[in-house]
Image (cartoon, rainbow, N blue to C red; front, top):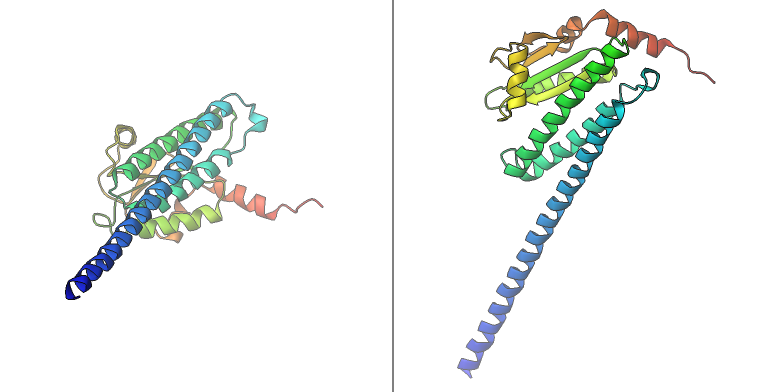
Length: 224
């Protein structure tokens, strides 16, 4: 009788551990499936953006919309941010996608400059160079300031690059503009500025042409 109780207890315990193991495996597989789904969606967005690059090379100046690519890249950036929060900033897949995203930004920057020159548009470009908060405590705050500036000036083209990434294209960008190691750093129309810039200080660095365009856009009455 006592032996039967031990057998029954063993079976119950084994069943509990077995159920826990199966549940753990299911949740693990589910998490991997969700991550794979995110990667697939980001890959599709990357392909879509690259196709847009090729299409925009063929458009007429009258059809150029400065916000076309920035919206797409902004959406991809938001998804990458969520992926970083889920998998961590040091995850190999996350770093790979972040490198790819950085290359897309550089391609967009070069294409936008080309369209701006060809179509005689006075587009203002801002490049933000940052590092992680361990080596740059004010970089996160600078990012928040830039978010507010973009809301104030929708026509401002902003590109952000993590200079800790091992990416030769970013190193070439730094070399091209002769950027010093200090972070955060902001490049406006080809001129670098170093250290944290408050909202007021950053606004003072922006060219008047951008502010005039923004004022004109907000003051123009809407057609009924």
